[in-house]
Image (cartoon, rainbow, N blue to C red):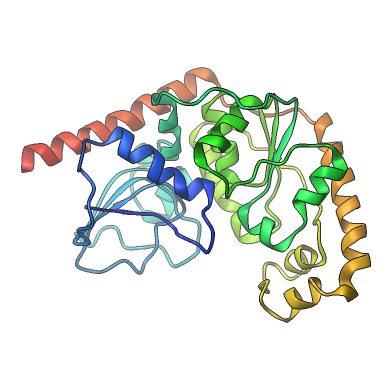
Length: 298
């Protein structure tokens, strides 16, 4: 059974959590490279283009509209649980399966301790690192930046070590919430990533109150204004990195820094202890039931 997760040009914290969590939770050698069976874990990876003949096992994944919804009723899918009620509705499955994003299972592991305790930190979406100048903006604001492309244990330690996390990355919020670090979500600059936040939040009865994020570069401004069109390697991206764009980018870095600093005054969010405890137990039970079912069928 092969572990399936999104692999981009650079490692991304939310996706790479699959390589950290599942080998620690599942039995030894449970996962392999057999593509006739697919273990679909953490991420918005419920796509409609998986191999038709492969057996697909869903463990806490989400649907975000990146492709048309898959037909999970065609006889090749086995859905243990999904990220939230919006995913359940899109797939036309019972809302009882809308338990949580499976990154919540970090709560069951022995994790590294807090790293470099700070009062406030910011975690951008990994795409924003490519399009924007967030390292520079955070430096101007005097706010440490947590890099979503960094080593997993380092990121976990940094999230545990901050008293409040401002995050554009959804799995920054998911992990912060799981580890009981108060967080403040900001709407991703790329609009396509908005709805999945509500899917996750509604599963944990969180009344999501996302704040606005100001772009830190001309390229991010272009993406925001065009509804997500344009790529870094395209014409707009090349212009955005050219000397001609330098004055605008510099102004936007300082504007983004000032706005980021202003977010410190907002009240952070956190799910209720009882709710996340219940969701963790249900998610772990679903995983254990799946493993036992596989063993019994062997």
